[in-house]
Image: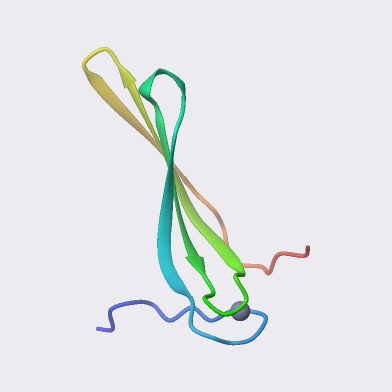
Length: 74
Ligand SMILES: [Zn+2]
């Protein structure tokens, strides 16, 4: 199977690159956003958001998947 599911930019048709960014929140919480980005025009398609929270000794991961079926209207 191919390494990446080929997602193409809706604007210019170039293959988008899978990447992520993480952001530290208060109380040691972390938010990670997984997305595809077009290297040419910078267009971005969010895939999934992970929220990692610590409560005592436990780590709670909340996962939120974006439904990317339709193009963004903006
Ligand atoms: Zn593009």
